[in-house]
Image (cartoon, rainbow, N blue to C red; front, side, top):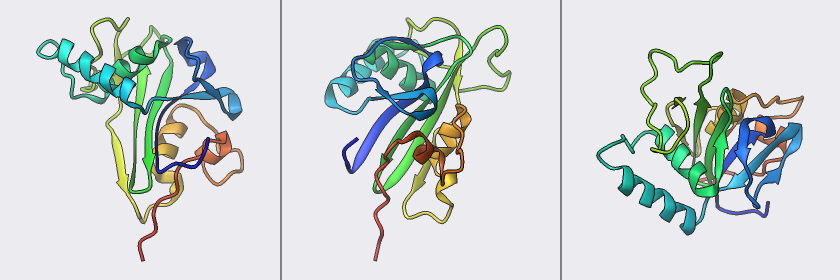
Length: 176
């Protein structure tokens, strides 16, 4: 990745994703990502929200993730998880999305379960995690690293999960 001020990606273990997208980039530890920033994807997600308005709670993170995945032609295998990460110089945010299966049902207290109409099966997302920069918490607890850890990324002796994968995130802006 070239240095940028903000990225928006979906990171996944290769075994957890269904479909193919030509922009999928391999990372370490058998993980990959697809860049989901860009007006064409944002327009597609917005159209999905308009189409589903009134039938589905389009304000949930699970809806955002499933609409984004559908717009790039990907899905999540039953029992799989993906991390939706937005990282910029001013803040970092993430959503961890889980696809239910027989061994991993939707938790009874899950409230973030809204998915696009065509999504196969039940799913849920953890609440969005957002940290403004600069932040006093260590980088390992910033949203990108917390989300990557939640989908199984190992730090493997590195300073954080993103570094262990080789995922270059924009460094936070340092205020004087």
